[in-house]
Amino acid sequence: MITLYDSRFSLNCYKVRLLLALLGVPYTRQPVDIRKGEHRAPELLARYPFGQIPVLDTGALALRDSQAILVWLARRHGNEQWMPTQPEDEALVNAWLAASAYELRLGPYEARLRKRAPFLCVTGDTQANNTERALQLFEERLRGRQWLALDHPTVADIAAFPSLAHAGDGDVDLGGCPGILAWLDRVRGLPGFVGLLD
Image 1: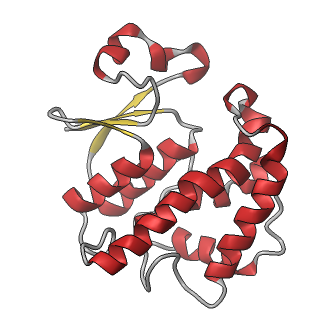
Image 2 (image 1 turned 90 degrees about the horizontal axis):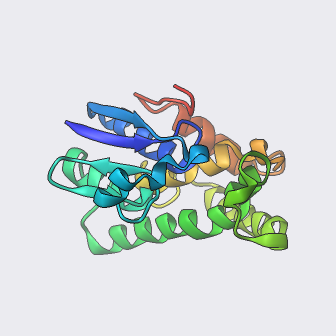
Image 3 (image 1 turned 45 degrees about the vertical axis):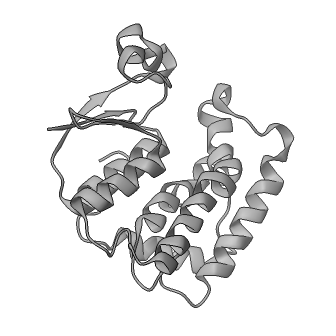
């Protein structure tokens, strides 16, 4: 049985829970309270030395980093739709995974952290500019498109969804981003979709 070491409010953990739900993969959820430092407990660090969550423990393998976990889940439990193996398509998906890990992390994700967990912030005073740039990039990509990387949902969409869906938690207004808003609704309409607090 897969075990997910998870924090309920973490967007990186949420993206893993979302893909698990969309793929219908059974798993056990092990809550970790990062405010209490449980992610750095000696017994966890012995197996998961990075001291970060999410961690997906398969019994034989302990995976960290939400993007890596999404790719593994898609390859192991999904199909070509979620993580293609054709080189050009795979490169496009990886490029948008990277945009979620960088542009969204330093922008809307960071804005949310400023309000909820400022001790985890990394951008200093650049968060507002980073957010504006990230929204512009994602809005331009989604203008006239259904999905981020390809013509169907992929792990790139799942990776980006939490930061954009919860941008309002950081006082980021998506009112001027109709492409993003329509895409958010499409993701919410996927069979098996779960919300952050589900």
